Length: 89
Image (cartoon, rainbow, N blue to C red; front, side, top):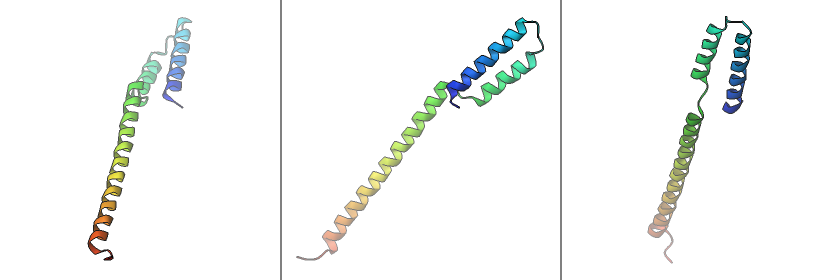
């Protein structure tokens, strides 16, 4: 379930609870606080999600850059080896 869907579920639940409170059911204070605290602790905000996404994409770019550098270094090693120890034609 995406964070947007979770946010809508929480919003709908809060709306339903508020509607019940308006009807005279006022014993929802503790469950409301508990639900709010749980949502605050376990659901990421959209900005946190974007930040994590950008960090992970940066890590992937960094890994690709490192792989390309290793490949380039290995290619240079091969050329150096062949120029020093290759066949003398």
